[in-house]
Image 1 (cartoon, each protein chain N blue to C red):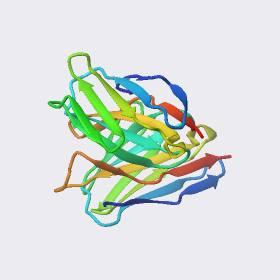
Image 2: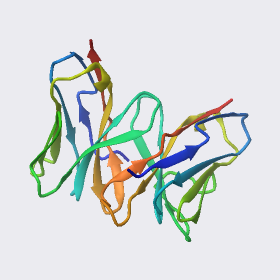
Image 3: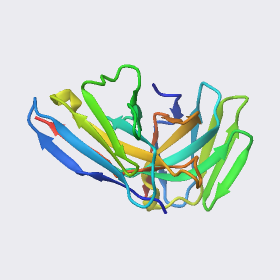
Length: 109
Length: 117
């Protein structure tokens, strides 16, 4: 079963704008990960944040984690057309990854 | 980086036939692999955990006799969809954690699109 929800389900922005998506989960976690999936393709790991971390950066990506609210956010700054994809959060509990519903992001040139 | 491959990348079969999908870790050993199913515009749902040398662990609601998993070596896991029906049409993705390295990261295969006519 899915761990939680992602919000929004879909997002359309202009190139150069920032994109923010949120993920909520229900149970205690070891870490939370964000993945990107281009249409009909496999998943690409973007960033991992551990349960004792609050914020993490990687290039144009910024992830926050609030374990008290059981939520995380992914910010993509200065978006590019190539960022068009679906983005999934996934929580790790034990040896399992459980995925959220995903956010479909469209970056218009 | 670590690479996971899947074969075939897509398959079309007739209803009632069986289809085997292979998942290989190309440059690392994986004692555990995971199989996911993804329907169009939906998220990945974990089907089962494949364990090298022992039986797979299936998630609730997944029929183990329908989806046969064999993890015969440290680099290969196979998923066989037996007596496939149109409702089994989906995108099947495997993943493997990189043991001994950044073990929290799972590497995903490119997926196999199954269409059952």
